[in-house]
Length: 133
Image 1 (cartoon, rainbow, N blue to C red):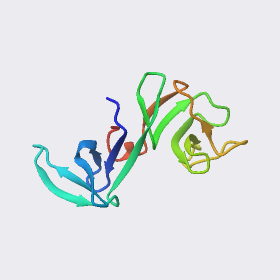
Image 2: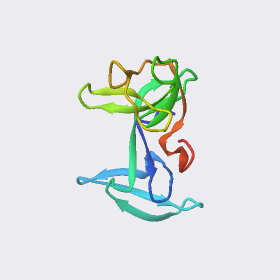
Image 3: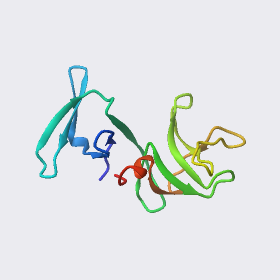
């Protein structure tokens, strides 16, 4: 399903359905639901969630790529990258990840341009805390 964004609930460490997020009179609202699907609480603002945008691209397997996804590919300076937004270029780029898990830099640039189907998504930065959405 092509969703324009997804959201990670920092408090409960799980994905929130985009349908549970709304914008009304200048504020973002989202609902936390229990296992039965009942609304347990409504939160206001984006401080408690990570809102991640769909890049509009897919990986080699057709999986939709989102901001903050972790992916692998055949790049000269990194095997693993995280999808990041670059304000200056107004676009998504692949930020190399060094062996210690810290973000590195490509020798010639800050990151790699995203090319559809040239990488494979292996998860999300949240995979340490929960499952990929």
